Length: 145
Image 1: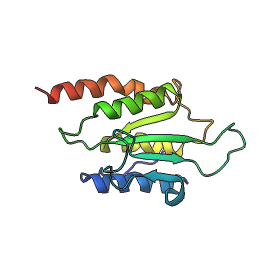
Image 2: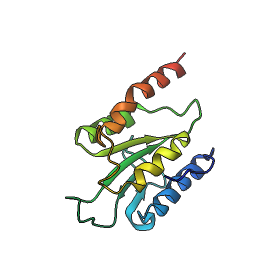
Image 3: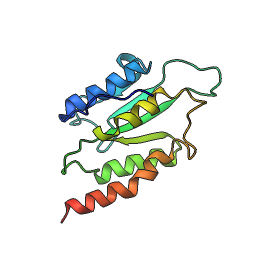
Image 4: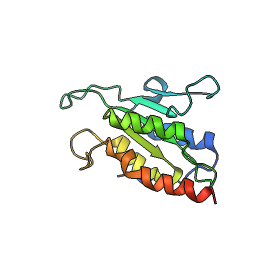
């Protein structure tokens, strides 16, 4: 597994850094990763990135499709109720759902370079958000103090 460079601090740089990892992992972000330029005219809480792996792998029954919400490490960067709604609904629909912060760079690389057979997390993809949800809700409670 590759080790990623120092995490970005600016949100735009952070998103660009994630898109760079998609590129290196063969996801072709210029045509297979969607991200909203501005949330003004978008549904509240919808994840920042939607990506489909552009290559059909013969040993998978379907292409990979994932959703990722990107958050900074800033104390004010919490998951909103609308974001929780979307992440929960997509998880329940058994989609591959993630919440990523700059401190997750190595994990992101591991997930995106995953080939569909050899590195699948034991608990499955859909549990990625579910496993992180409680910690994010605690983080949010701490901000309200």
